[in-house]
Length: 355
Image (tube, rainbow, N blue to C red):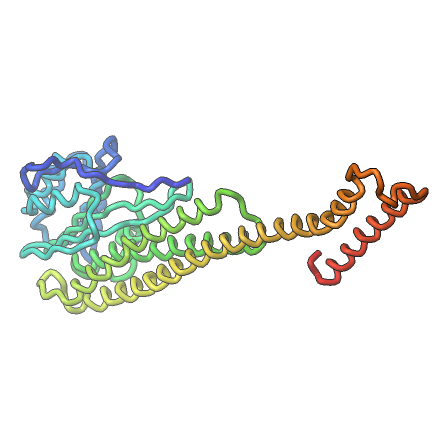
């Protein structure tokens, strides 16, 4: 049974706004910092041992992607934020993993929160918060732990595939968001397969007592995906309409493509929600049909034995003068009548297609 992941804020009432408090569950994650510094002509990939080594990329002419894994390392995140002049409330939102997908537009940077979805080894859906900060010549990304959907992006940077090395940091932001959104299709494909498996099992009558709980778990997964996708539509829409100099006009077309993908995923999620309700109705109908079958068999058996019980009851009474009791073949005749009644009723029920 899957467990619903609930984040509870550790921030106390009256605490100073902008205090960095990690609210997630992965408090033992190691700090991992990687950078891709590139232009059209070169790309340098590094794994940095300390956060201070990332400071040198702020004012370079190249484009830099700094990816930090380990939101529990709030001291390093605060140091990075201070160097890049990130507002303390933004840093607070980065380590508060219960954030809703959103966008904050500032003078020197744009802050975006979205959810990365994937299935773990137990086939339970996981929603991990990813925070992105777009600057003039850099993109900062923050994740809870190692492992993400950006391997294709790294490969494109290393081997100069596509346009990513020829365009600015706003295109790099698009590529990262697009990688997350593309992975949504893999998630909803698995959801669709699960729903089809449940439909097949219910139609075949191959259901057990736990299937209702499994359907409820699947409904929670769909709701988790919906909560990640629907607010992101508003985020991408605001990027399209954004007049910030950080987003170039020729890049807007690519963000529109992301928006189209989100619409497609959203429509599938709505369809799956309806199918989940249908699955529950199908399951209840299946249970009802099984109960009706049992009741039908019991009713037929009772109907057969009612006249036999009636006859046995009459001749089982302790009256002294029952005429048939003195007849020599009364016992055998009674058995014959009861057998004829039994066979006759079976034939009648069969003819009525009740059996």
